[in-house]
Amino acid sequence: MNETLDFHALSPATTPGVQFENGEGGLPRLLVTSPQGDAAEIYLHGAHVTRYQAAGQRPLLFMSAASRFEAGKPIRGGIPLIFPWFGPREGLPAHGVARTQTWTLGANTFPPAAGSVRVTLHLDCPAAAGFPAFAADYTITVGATLGLELAVTNRAPAGELIFEDCLHTYFLISDIDQIAIQGLSGGEYLDKVGGAVLRRENEPAIRIASEVDRVYLDTTGTVTIRDAAWRRTIRVAKTGSASTVVWNPWIAKSRQMADFGDMEYPGMVCVESGNVGRNQHRLAPGATSHLQVQLSAEPLAD
Image 1: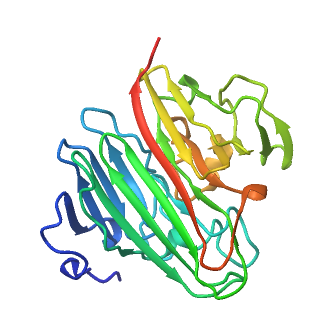
Image 2: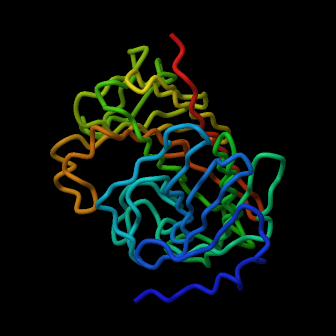
């Protein structure tokens, strides 16, 4: 059974724009609202953003109705925080440990500027699983756009911290047949569906009509999702990220996932920002890396 969180121990009751409560499965979450009504929902479990909606717009993030909200289990949808490794690792949980750990509220939760609210979550990890000791700070800024920054520090007295990171963002879309992903043309990608081989993206826009699981390497630019039916463009701008992952499970994979609905795949697409494979980080003792992502939506230009 999950314990009820003492929210007063986390932060002063006067923190503007931030409300504390027990969410799904009794897991503690933060409800964040900017002065103009932009809203987000953040679980301390995994430092997981499960909702973001700019004032006057549709929700930006997809959440599976079958998602588990359980200690030790990842949440399906929203923005899972993948760290310190991406994908499977023998004897260890897939996609790292950060997404199933309980993060603590950092010291600088405050409105950084007019029109937005900032929340920082913190995670300390001792040396384990082949990794030296490290600390992570995840700052989420809720306003007319959603700002995300993951800062990782190597706290070991000696030895490199070698890791992968990824903000595994699930976007809510009208229908998979109605979208086009732009900004990756010409890039090299690892096709994980087609036998984990390297391919070159020759199309000006990516359209999805089957299972897709691709890691685009050495991609640092902004990626957009053009949604024709909802007449909006989702923009994924980033710094400190050299990899972009595009994922949709399609029919067969959806049916294999216990925490994902069989027919939810047409309403979502993942466009993920991070540093994977040959783009992984190598941090010297005391050094800090920064992964920054800015998410927004705007009316579709004709």
